[in-house]
Length: 129
Image (cartoon, rainbow, N blue to C red; front, top):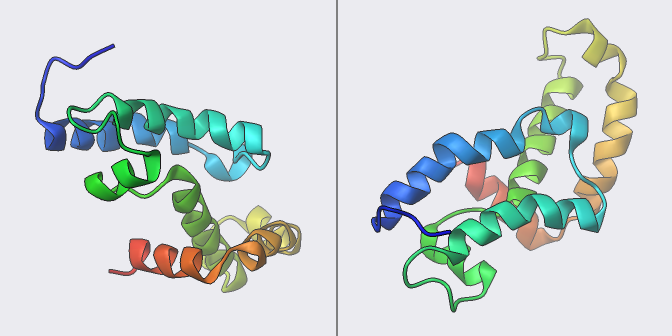
């Protein structure tokens, strides 16, 4: 599969507008936690970046750096942190979420505690620039 346009910035904007929302829709309900699931979701972005002109020979992490795109796993981690913050400070309008806060926090705290300092710094830069 190849793209009709060769303008990388246009294709990346289209990916962000049309594809990434589908990959992240209701992530807090179905967010993959097994390596196989994480790999399958990330393969969409991995395949997209590989097909862009001039980037096919670069490793995935380098392609993301060139395109200034975060990995989908890093975006999920950042969104998990935001959800935890909103639950902790009762900023959600849904009473069900507030009553389930201890269950959700226990699930997400493990993810947060297992992330490296570099990942935490990257998440901070992603959402608080």
